[in-house]
Structure formats: structure tokens, C-alpha cells
Image 1: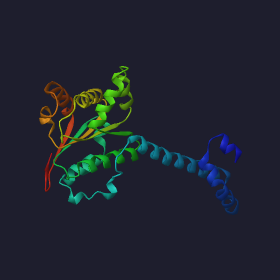
Image 2: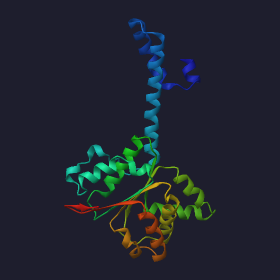
Image 3: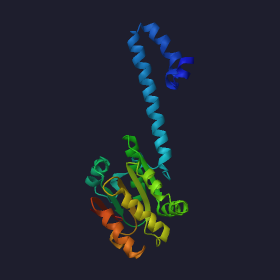
Image 4: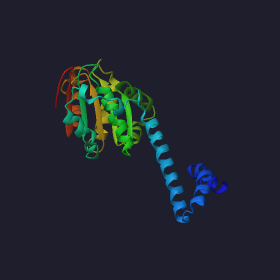
Length: 231
């Protein structure tokens, strides 16, 4: 027990009192006991890492595909299946899901984020207002580049709920910086009430043009509504 504490093997420690009597009673080979104990430690660490990655992601509601009804979504089933493979993330492609409120955009993006974490990837979640806060926080000491570098450690970055209101200048800057930093290096998933082609209606035209050019290059665009969608 003391050695498991020194070696930081908490999951082995929890199993010792049950597994050692079982191994003795069933006359396990010593190598089998070692294998089972190490497997328990590995499984415990994997589960702890999963919890930690979910916590760091900052998901808002805990919505996963377990509570997603693909038959009620306006996203075509074939499109759902293709995106759920997550292959587009490994190719550093983007996803833009566009449509009115109540069509499952945020749920879909969050469920994809959870699926990415379960597949061993890292994810982080932002609203457009979060990006404005980020810019203001790091402008004082000119550390925005470092902040973006930390965000880019994630395999998938999700920005939720763009287009309901005009984007504040700080948020527009933060969104552009994020898209520029991720361009052909990381995958972005963006949900919006407004198609990216219309972003110049809610943010400065120059920033909108530069942002959309990078965002839509190598991107999957899914347009949702109450009854059907097109890709």
C-alpha cells in the first residue's frame, strides 16, 4: 500500500484488497495478477483524464449524442454520420452550422466536442463574448499571441451562437485572431444564426472578409431549419 502511494498508483491501491485474495484462491499466474493490476491503473487514469478534458473544455450544458435524436434533426443523416467520424478534425477542416434558433446547432456542436474528447482529442468551447473578454484581458500586457497559442493546443475549438446580435469590436478582433491562428492547423466548429457570407452585417467588413476567407477554406457548411437542411 505504501509503495502504491509513493509510486502514485491510486487505482492499483483500490483494487489490491479484492484482487490479491482472488488471485490466491484461483491460483493466478503472478504475471496475470500484474497484468490485471496495471490494466486497472491504466483504465482509472484514462477515466480521470477524460473527466479532466471535459472540465477544461468548458462545455455549457453537458449535451452529448446519447440524448441526440438524429431523426428529429434537419441535418441529413448521411451528413451526421460523416461528421461524427471526426475525420474532418484530423484533416484540420472546419465546420459551420448555420440556421435559426431552436434547430439544434449548439447541441450538435457540444455533442461533437464530447465525442472528440472520448476519441482522445482535446476541445475548448467559447461564445463570441468570451473572445471579446479574452482580448480585453490580454491587451494590457500584449499577451494575446500567447493566449492564442494555448488555445491552439486543442484539436477542436468551438465558437457558439454567432449572429444573434452585432459583434462588439473586441469580440470581432478575438474571432479573427482565433480563425487566423487555427487556419490549416486546427479545426473550428462554429454555430451561427447568420451564414458566414453575411458576417459583414454584424462585424467590420475588413475583419469579416479576412475571417470568412480563412474560416470557409476547407470547411463543411451545414444549413439547418425546422424541417430540412442542405449542405
